Structure formats: C-alpha cells, structure tokens
Image 1: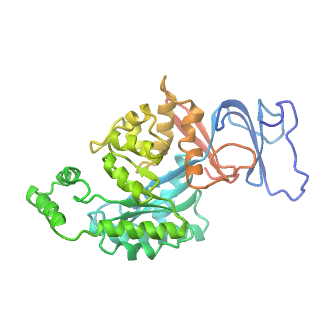
Image 2 (image 1 turned 180 degrees about the vertical axis):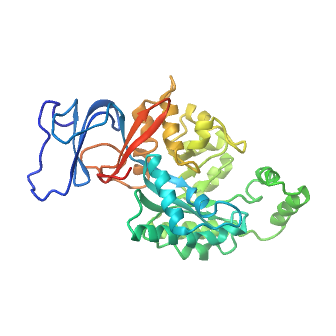
Image 3 (image 1 turned 180 degrees about the horizontal axis):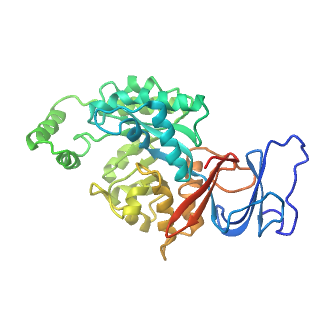
Length: 389
C-alpha cells in the first residue's frame, strides 16, 4: 500500500516535476477496501498511497470525506437533453456541451462515453442531432473547456433505413469506443412495441398497422444489425445489444457475437445474458428509484440476483453515485469498494481503459471527494491530477 503514516511523503528526484498534490485524512476506496489514509499525486498520476495522516506541508485535509476513483459512465444521453431541451428548440452546441460536461463532473464522472443517437428512434427530429452534438463536443475540446475525458458511444437505431451510411460517416471518429445496436421494432417484440406506442398515445389502429406492415414487408433491422456487427469487428469496437426481453433474444445476440447486454428489461433476459457470459450494463435511475419508469424489471431485483456488471447514468448524471450508495447501504449488498467498482473499475476493464478506474499507484489521478450527507455529495473532482471542481 506504500509507506507508513509516519514516513515523509516520497519525493521525485526529477526537479522539473510538473505538479504535486497531496490529499490526506481521506476514506480511500480502492478496488478491495476502504481505509483512512493519504494519496500523493505527481504529474497527474497516483504516486503513493499510505495509511494514516501526513504532516507534509501543503497537504489538503479532506476532513474524513471519501476519496473515490473517478466514475466512468459508459451510457448517457444527457447531451441530447441539453441540445434539444424542448421539441423544436435546438440550443447552442458549444453551450450545451459545456453544460453537459459540468453536470457530469458535479456527479463525480471523470470519463464519459457520450451516447449519441444514430437514426431517429421514432422521432424524426432526432435524426439531425448527431453532427450537431459532435460539433459542440469538438469545439469545447478545441477550446479546452471540457473537465471530464469525453469518449464516444454511438447508439444505432436498427430500424433506420440509411443506418449503415449514417454510422460509417462517424465510424472512424478518434474517440469512438462503443456501439449499441438498438431495435425497438415490432418484429423484435410486438407486445413491447404495443406498450411503448400506447405510452405515446398512438391510436390502436396505427399500432396494429405498423405491426402488420413489418410482418408482411421486408425489414431492414436484420440487415442493419449484420452489417453493423461486421463494421464494428473490422475496427475492433465493442458492440452491445439493447433492451433484451427474452432468452431467445440473448441467444440471437450471441449468434451475432454481441458480448454486452445493455439494459435487459426482464429477469429472464438478464439471467440468459449471465449464462452466456455477457457483460450486463444497467441504468442508475432505475436502481435508485427501485423501478423502471416504463414497467421493465427493477434493477434492484437484478442486483439481488447478482446480475449487474456496470452501472451507467442512462439519463441522470448523478444516478451512478446514488446507486453505488444504495447498494453499499444494503445489509446483504456489496461492500462500498465492490459497489464503487461497478461505476469505475468494471467499466474500465470492460472497455480497455487500463490507466484508470481505481485508486492505485501508477494509475491516472482521476479522483472524487464525496461527503456523506444523508447520501453522497460531490465536493471536489480531480481529472489526471488537475482539480476541475
């Protein structure tokens, strides 16, 4: 774990050291334990971890707050809400990207996979958003305005007739790390399609006409899925299925080589995903609320069955940290270290981010100071050793 509490903080011999930060009197959460101690950061990396306090001059006393690894959010469509705050209203892309980034940092997220829609998902207005959102993120990056590390996650609507062309326009984006194939068509699950369309107050006659049309005409979703999988494999991109409902759909996903199940919506689908060795990603809002807002399985039930690998924020940035606190607070739940790993170490491992995801020597100093005030409150954030909040 490093030197003892009474030893002087180690000093680099390199006189040109860029920056040193020492955080002490912290409840440090590593991959396996939580203990009171001190963390030394040098040049943006964790240089040393020790138990107890330090007397080194300039050390920051964090008053016994928790020190967590920065959270890694692999699925959030929060930027879309900033760009399109109301139907028919498109906000300034740069301002939207900056507001999105600030809220993520305030939630303890230091690495985010911005989950941007490719296609319309039943709303033609959304089809035009992808280049606008990428423009805002790119401009914010060029101006050095982003606090978190932003990577790209493309959520692809398999129902979109021109999906592959839309995807290929951005398939070689330098930040692209993850692709989800989303299929909410009546072909995949007519009953779920009926349920979702009724929520939109779609007339029953239109719902049944849509189901009949798909059943009797050529359907592009299968061809889109097959071609997307081929393009992802060629680029070495991880790709996921989405909203799996049945064991049969998991089996179908496995035949395509999908190794990630995002938001399985029934216990049966989640169990099948686990049996197939798939990584299971769930949404924090569902876990915190104790239920799905559209009647899907409760993530708490998945947790009780050991069917969670990664927690994402989905659409509420603060939900990952709240979900972690909820799980760690259950008498039969995981330890705090185990719960924290679901939002940091596990996504880092799943997506090959070997330089981050835990508090350990040699890792990037992505750290979050969290006070427990009837729940977790983020008080400070460091990204690669630089305090950004």
